[in-house]
Image (cartoon, rainbow, N blue to C red; front, side):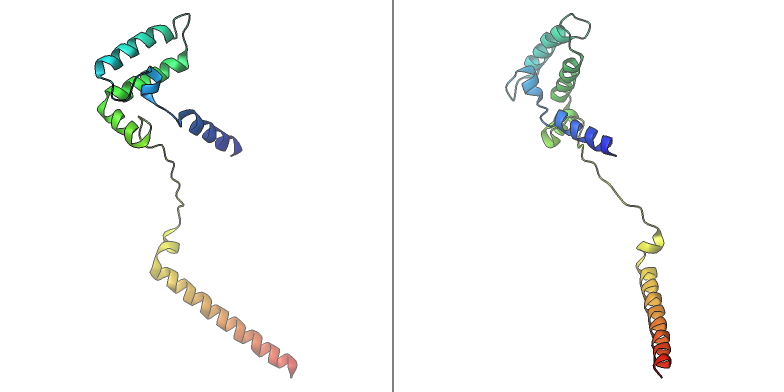
Amino acid sequence: MIFAFYRTQQFDHEYANFDPYNIFGLDIGASNAEIKTAYKTKALVYHPDKETGDEILFMNLAKAYKALTDATSKRNWEQYGDPDGSSAISFGICLPSWIVKKRRLNARFTSLRLNYYVCFTFYRMKLVESID
């Protein structure tokens, strides 16, 4: 559990400031020709098979290129800050239907109140008998 929390924190830190224009060194609103030229230039330098290659940087270049050239990825990046879309994690709790259904829930509470009343009355009768 702690490891999962740690990895989640690392993941958030790694991708928190993804800016494809900054990766290519371009101004916001650069043309597709400028983006393509910057991608090809940097891809030749940082390709993993080259001596100066950097695999992580090359993957970021590919992701940034896709984010700026693909319409869906670009919209996701502008809206969520990530070309893959929303990265929010949501959790839910599954409950049995007998707990959730209101009609049955009211019946259970009525039953609990009735049981409480019967037990309390029985206890009071025993208490009165013990005092006498």
